[in-house]
Image 1 (cartoon, rainbow, N blue to C red):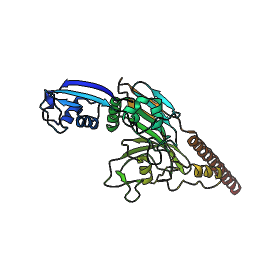
Image 2: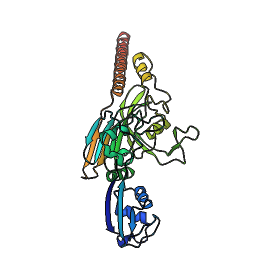
Image 3: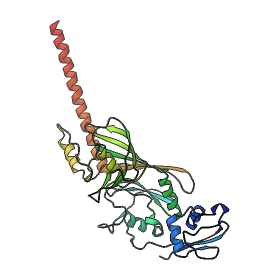
Image 4: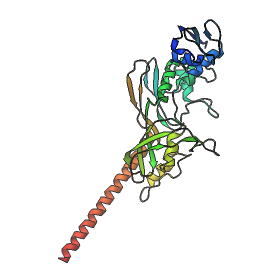
Length: 342
């Protein structure tokens, strides 16, 4: 796929005086990332007053600028026709509902059969957009909503919205444990010091903020609604495990699964067989980068998650009925005892 070109000709404003060239260009062309502009400067695609320049060169304001915006296709990742659950699409973006078990980006051990491969088959033009347009990511076994930008300009704007915490992301998380109420977890996250494939709460990590509130209670589990302020790798999984509320099924951070005591063989078998983290990106809100309309999307829980919740509700209902019957029996016994004493 040959590269696409777009030429920008403009004069730097007087307010740019004293800025580095890459800073002045980032202010003048906010639809492109600063990294992309720096690459174009290095490649000689930017002319400052008729000459090539370096990113660190200072500008005076008033210079004529020519930028030959070049969009090369990424040929390292191949297109592969895979089913996509498209919740919304227009010329600017896509919103997808990712199933559990699907890897987002190719990597070691996953060179094909990924969401990025599928996106390139759905829209070959995404080869010119960073990461085939994916604005954020979900872990392999996490299901739910993802945003895909269809042009480099839209990608830059949506990444900026994400960095400014203007994109709302809410998850449903089933945890082992029963918190007394909602909470805000503000703990930095970094790479685990000895287990390099894991993340951990650590003082020298990057800022990470997770909010949760209780959606539904069960006997020894709780369904939480989780809202992210930041988007660190494994953030929800690490934060909830850190406060003693590990995700059901999480093979890395999960620990205990919250085995239910009593007559709960079917439920415990289902909990044991749920071999992925019970985490679903259920709700997404953003401002459309073109129309400025606020968009809101929701995705239903996958079938395995729904089945697990149904079993938890059934068991909680049966246990509650048994407790009420026992309490009623005790009350009748007390009333008969009082009658005999009189």
